[in-house]
Image (cartoon, rainbow, N blue to C red; front, side):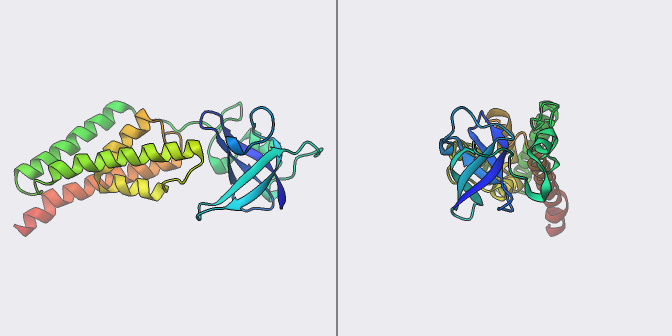
Length: 225
């Protein structure tokens, strides 16, 4: 059944966006190849679409096309009008004066690199004094390569409307010690680098991993010995 809604977020660079409809609780994902109208979708555009659900990843819109017959775009959930979305939707983060979502403030590279060097030095020292297994010298770099690859595949999936890696999985890689690889993915791939909420959760995993490493090296291991 055809539904009506309004484009509330469109990322031209990545070729996907979201539609908000009063008939669906969550925002509905759609890819550029699912858009049948001429030109490029824009925030505030009233559209009609077919909604599907695949693999438990949330609603997805197919056969999206401008609702040319509509005189006024349908009201959004909660009674908000598309113009209010263009002025700024707090549910999806702060926006600039032109209505675009403002990027998250990025952490300067120097402190992050210093933290990585200190973290790597701690691991090396732990192996040297037999408080960490020598296998850590191989597993830690491998884990970070796997983490970087997970971010790369997720970015590719996002650009092509394919199955995505969950954010919880990406955070788990970071928590286990792959956070330097995740940081490299943020900087090199520019993936997950604009979402303030995701970046905040990422730094929580960094703090927890470093705290666990220090606890193991300076508290658990000495008490065992």
